[in-house]
Length: 247
Image (cartoon, rainbow, N blue to C red):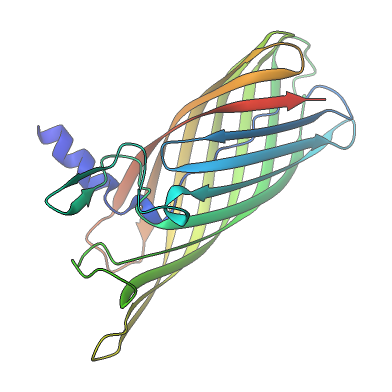
């Protein structure tokens, strides 16, 4: 019970940042292309990667949370007594994000094990009724945006019928957040803060030579820097599945 309570506290404020569905292309030669689309418990996403030279590749990704289309926060949300409880995946805000980066692949010069690194930037935004108050409707809302810089490493094995491996990302982000109330008295609260992120995950792609079913499982941990918040640390799991096509 205590572990559940601690976990709930850690995940309560995670909605303004949804962890990235990281690109894990495991490229081995120039000209390779990998595109992927999938779904997680709180969002849908699309990834794209291209090895434009013998050493370097570009990656791009976008993800959009379910709250942009529906009142449902995430797949595992539950409603009781007129209020929605968010268990674990932080989808209670309408979140959108896009990222792009470049990196080097096949750093081990091995046909058996592949290692690649990337660096890039990510921009995200979110908006929703503020979770700290029971007010419903557009009169009171929370709006935030962030800019993030990240470095990422992928390590794994690639075969004709399957691919698997591990990835890890470290990142720094700057957040700009506003609370706005448009009722009888106008209220505007503005705050800025920074965060450090750590996102490890494992992945597997299984199928035929060009089309594979993809799975990811990982965790996101974030630490606030210089913010007037009681929460110093939060985390949430990342689980996703989709289809990838390799050219």
